Length: 313
Image (cartoon, rainbow, N blue to C red; front, side, top):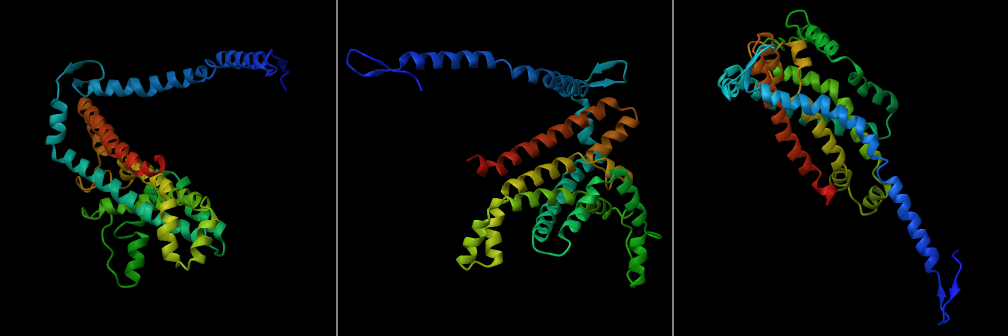
């Protein structure tokens, strides 16, 4: 406690101690101020080298025709070719369809599984592990496994359907089913992560809300719609954002299962970029990478801000 000194008016005076404390605090702040910025130096350099520089280089080379050794400026020709080619336009459309389809199913199915796995059921912990296990499996391994399972003649799925008198379709050979089939496999592999995020959101909801709803006579559906669903908004925003980014950038699973076929039926932008790069059209493939980057940015950034607007306010 600071000592006091009587002033001529008889009032206590503690200004020197306060002033000393203030000076010491200001001195401490001055000493501590620059210290945390040194921790940003190494991550900043890494971010600059591995993200900013490659991104700017991609923008530049997308306006050129280059062969790894020389480059020639051609302006917007690569972009004109990209949007003029039917295969590239199909890939752009399939990318959006694939991302929306997988994201929508993961949101609905992930939330339903989370509600089930947070209720009082037998072997709840075991079922959580089973649901999450596919997330840990290699994407290529999953793709090759389901390619065998979905074989129209010898695959386990169609063989099982034949036992009950159903003629199974060509899951990966039918142009109208190929993209949807791969999307369902993507959901099977990724819904475990969405479920875990939703479980974390559910267990963070205070029990007083549900108790108050029960006292007021609310049904389970009314409680879910009016309490659980609004409070799960941050978890839903995370699931949608992660699923959309993954869907828009998807390549490995599609390439392992269909290689973009049959024809261009399951091609996405990433697989088209890879095919163009294999053919030696480096400038065109770089332009496709820029288009994919802009597509992800233009869809995900506004959507994320819209989903988080309630939490920010």
